[in-house]
Length: 297
Image (cartoon, rainbow, N blue to C red; front, side, top):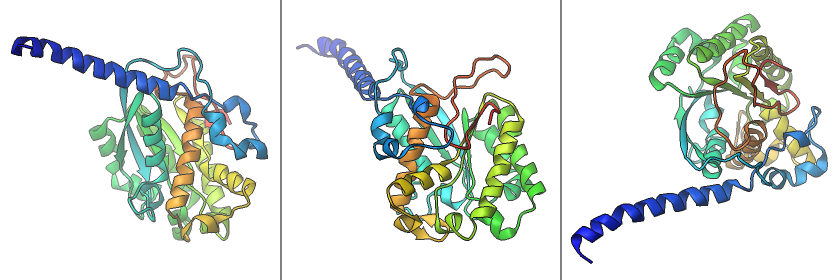
C-alpha cells in the first residue's frame, strides 16, 4: 500500500472506530428505562427493592437515545459528604452516579467539584464564591447536596438557612442551569440523634425548591431512598459506617447506585436539559417520597 493510500485509509479507520464506539454506547444504553411509573409516592414495595437495578435496566423507549454524543458540565455544591470523605479515592455518591450516567448514556457529564469541606449554605452565600463559580464554570446542571450536619451542629437559624438556599436556586436559574437537589446518604447522625433536625432542614430545602414553580428544579430525597433500601434488606447505618457523619466506601457506592437509578427514573437516558419556564413542556418526573419537579410536591 502506498503512503498516499495509507493517508486516505486512515480517516476511514477513524470514522469506523467512532461509529463503533457510538453503537457500543447505544447497545449499552438500550437496556435502560425510566421506572418512575413503577414507583408510588409512599416509596417502593419490598419486591421492587430486591431487584431495583434490574427494573431500571430494562428496555429504553424508542428514540430515547441519540446517535450523537453530547457533553454537559455538572457543578456540584455541598460539604464533606458530597466531596467523598471516607471513600479512599473521594469517589462520592454524586461522582459515582454521574460516572454511571456517562458510561450508560449518550451524554458525557463533566464533573466539576465545588464542594467545601466543613461548609454550609449560609457560609457559601456570605463568601460570594458561588456566583463566581457559576460565572467561571458555566454549568448546564447545578447539583446542591448539603449534608446539613454542619448546620445542625452550628444551630443555623432556619431563616438564614432558608435565605441561603433561596439564593442558591435563584442564582443557578439566572445562569440557565438546571438545579437538582440531592439529600445526603444515611449516616449514624442522620439516622439517629440528629434525624429530626436534618429532616427539618430538608423540608426547608424542598419548600424553597417548590416555591419557584420552575420546571428546571428537581428534588431527589436520596436519604429517604437509602433508608427504605436498608430496611428492605435488613440493614442499618452500621453496614455503611465511615464515621458518625460520613458513609464508608460501601455507603458511597450504594448511594451512588440508588442515585443513578433515581436519575434514570427522573430524566430517562436523554440529556438533562434546560426548559423554558412557562412553556408547559416538562419532561422531568417526580421521584421518591419527597420528590419535587417543577415546583410540584
